[in-house]
Image 1 (cartoon, one colour):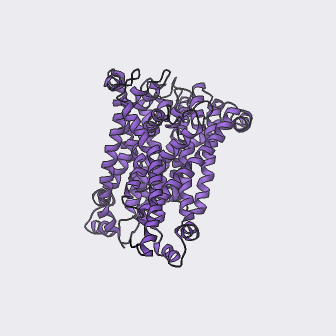
Image 2 (image 1 turned 180 degrees about the vertical axis):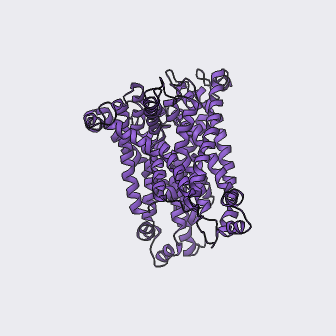
Image 3 (image 1 turned 90 degrees about the vertical axis):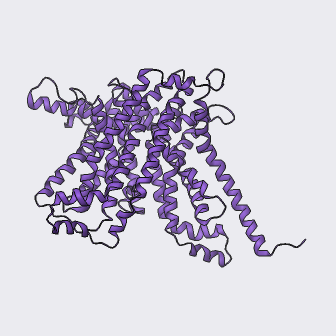
Length: 571
């Protein structure tokens, strides 16, 4: 029998190794993505007692009016948040991108700060600001007017909408500004030449060109609002109304009703998948926006005195989302009693010392937060880079399937993913519940799409001919990865690590379902301590999270650039 030529033998040996890696990655993705979702879907049709297939879970999940009401509340919440977030974000994006408004750097920094602050910490801050009677805004109003009570009550649907919108409008800002930066001024100047004013030109020419981006951001904000757990739990539950995520959490009160929770989570997953598909379709239509801006010149719109009006609007929004919340968090974190106000005799470092040094639970939770976040980031980045490399280098047939699996968690709300992990890994053959690994793997899965998107972008930026040169000179693929690919992509991969690490350290929606007393993290500890009403301690825990995040962002500035967080969030 004639042996194949040496070049074919080498090709098949290379293909065999690639197939082994491909099969290994498929196995890991089956464990992280497919198995939890499959077990979640199966559990929704299983009887808790016998394990037989049944529709009883769906009848239970949607057989009571309060369960249906919670679903309706979530849809109303998502719609109102998306509308308010659009009202907040679009004018700010236009002002920063297209006008001569002053202090753009300050506005940009405040929006970056809004990205950094977790929404549940923002909810704590707004409880301090607008809690009935005791909140700072109500106290100022009472002091100025002599009224018996203040007008603000954060414990309401409108209060919850405001809090979530304050921390989701940056999506609209980033998406819209990215689109505006691609549009030249030629058509706007043509409209002005024909007699159109600034307002009419903006409404009739500029904004229609960015409509796909605005609609895409609208959908992202809607999905963010209906999937959040922390802010609704802190505000909606004391206000005595439910949304889907808080109802799912209550299904896990002892004894946990995993099958009913799985059935109740199915519509949330279906809504998310549909709207994500719709959002992708809308974003795909942005091509005509990009074409208008190729090579075009962008001239800033002179607003005259109106530039101070726009600055005032931007500072109002960023005050609601960043300046006022962080001010009250800092005041409470360094106060003996936050209600005593700003005075030297009320200052103390005991709260932070208690969180970081004296209290074992907070010290342990801090350690868990950063260790779990770091481990999850390494796993997600390693897996994502391997998948992106296989896909880009076309090492195996059907490698594109790996990219679809890597991006699948993007359409899975964190709370649904957590229920899937609970259903999959609380029983043999692989029991992870009660260990740190279930949190680490859940975080890695939750933010795998971020790692993959950035790894994919990094590989696209590199010319493969440099890698091919190493192999032509006799070096293997591993040598090329170590000597060429790694050094060239280290900055981008470092940024990807930070972008996964930051949300991993503050993730609450997944952690609240999967932690045990021995694996508590800071986000869960902050939520648990909210029942005690110790806002000094809550603010201190939140401040530790924010300071840790700021340190990582500063590191990202050094490696990638000043706007790496916002730039990589844009479509």
